[in-house]
Image 1: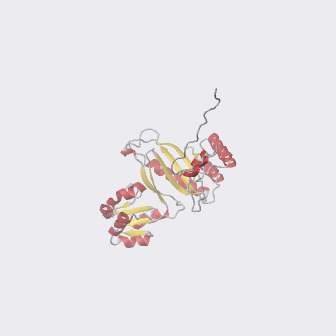
Image 2 (image 1 turned 30 degrees about the vertical axis):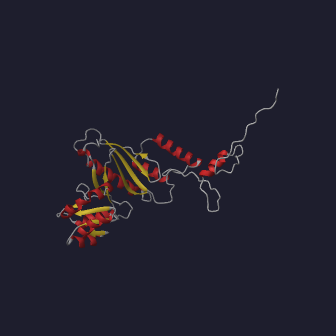
Image 3 (image 1 turned 90 degrees about the vertical axis):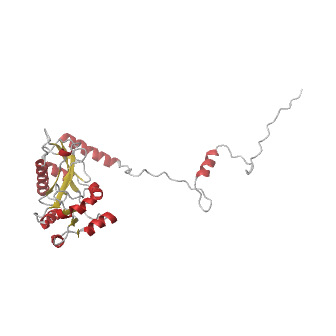
Length: 289
C-alpha cells in the first residue's frame, strides 16, 4: 500500500505580480501603504485626522472646575438687584480685552404675530464704548450736513449702486432721508438680513421735519437699535466692562425703560418675563425685576 500523500502545489502568480507572498500580519500594512499618499522620494506619509470645523478646543480641568463653581454659585444666588449684578459681573472678568456688557430680555410676545414684534432705538446716556460707522443715504444740501455731523459714508444714488453692485457694507448703521427711500428700498435683500435696512421704527428714516445732523450725532454717540428675534427675545450691548458701575446701571435702566414703553397693544399679561446680564466671555446673571 502506497504511503504517498498529495502535496499542494503553490498557486501560480498572477500576470504582472512578483510572485512573492506577503508575510503573516503584513496585509494591513500593505493595504494602508497602498492607500496612503506617497512623497516624491517614494516615502509613504500618514494623514492626520483633522478636527471638525467649529469644534472648540477642550478646556483644561482647572478651568472646567472654575466655571462649574461659578455657575453653581450664580444658580444658588438667584436673581440679583441691578447694582449687585454689575458688581458680580466685574468680578467674573478673565478676558484680556475690554468685554462688551450685554442685556438679554425674554419677552412675553408671540413672535409669529407681526403686530407683536418689538423694535426701536434708544440713545444711552453714556454710549456703548464703541466707534460706530454711520452711512447716510441723502442728496442735495443734506450731504454737506451729513458730512459736517460726522457721518462716515455719505452718498445718494451712487451709494445705492455701490451697495447693490459691489456689496459695500463697511458701516454699522444706515440712515436714509425720506426722499431717498424709493431708491434705498431696492437694497432690502442686501441690508435687511444684516439688520442695516433703514426703518421709521428704528429712527433711521429721517423725514424732512427732523434735523438730519441731530440723528447722525445720536447714532455716533451710541444710539442702540434693538429688535425681537424669532424666539421672542431681545439682545443688545449696553456698554463696556470698563465703564463705572454707575454708568452701566444708568445705561441698563434707560434701555429697560425704553423697551417697556415699546410694549405692543396686542400683548396681554407679563411683557418682560426675565432679564439676564452678561459680558462677552462671562456666564449670565439673572436680574431681579
